[in-house]
Image 1 (cartoon, rainbow, N blue to C red):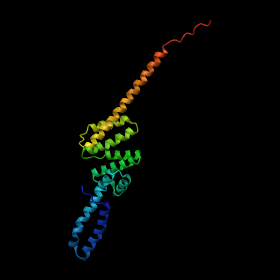
Image 2: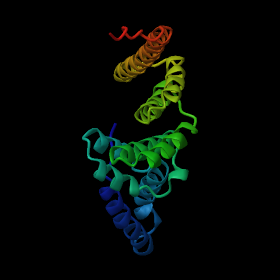
Image 3: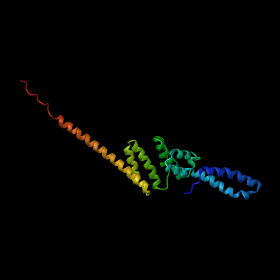
Image 4: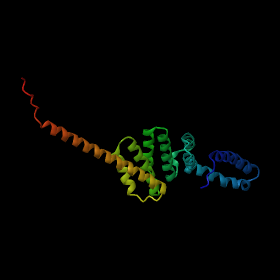
Length: 207
């Protein structure tokens, strides 16, 4: 997908706007008309699409600071087109998590989750992040809940499917560990109970 560099977009708006006004004044409306056509496209696409696409490209390179700065250039997140708005909060939340600001990241991801998204891949991506946060806090029940929601979806993205499988294995191994601990605890109590049933050992008679 073609993405116009945000700084180039700002430069074009700053150049075209006064140029259109001057052309209109000195040469007439029709000379300025092409610029009047281009300007709304540049401005409206910035307002309703924001900087999400370019921020996503930066996120893929693992540069959290640059991603955060690029998202800061979005004019108003609540004005974004619905899918871009969800991705804005997803990216911002992912940045916070990468910066170990887990609580702030979780709030933003839940905000992204509350926004209707066009496909299960996007919804599953957000749930997977929330499940990983729950697992990192040892909230395995909550992680299992998110995992069940993901598994009920029609995920088609191969990378996302693999991540879901990894999470499922982690949750499964945690369940096995807890079961083993319970069995170990029960076995230990049985040993103690068996030992407590024995009488005291008689002391041999003194001569």
